[in-house]
Length: 182
Image (cartoon, rainbow, N blue to C red):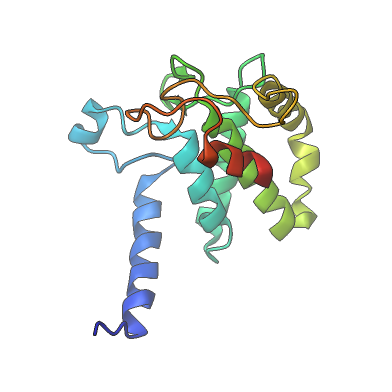
């Protein structure tokens, strides 16, 4: 039987902090450390899903640099929000190029809202709901336009979440679990 000893989780925690710091940019967390290979595959961009999920852990990591980087990522993504309220799938830090995915990446907006809500619950003194009031309202309006008006579930196009190679569409459980959460 495998036994996990306390030093292993501690070591994993500190190694993960180092990795996050390597991937940190002034605009938030990049999907991968900057290498020629990651740049060639466009993984030096700030992907909303990754940045939002990482922001929750970074905010409570106890590391001030990561906490600051987490907020920078949320602000950077909000500053590139589409007029209709959708948060982009990714933003290229060096050019500001945004991508919203061909079919409307629905979970990026949900994860951004989840991260803002997480921050608000853990750091109410930061007043992030006031800081992001406009982007939050716009994001919710966009999501409400994706919602079925009778059953209140979000409808999504095929391949419009993180599993973009999977033929999932309609009322997807993953998407609606996030919708329920936010």
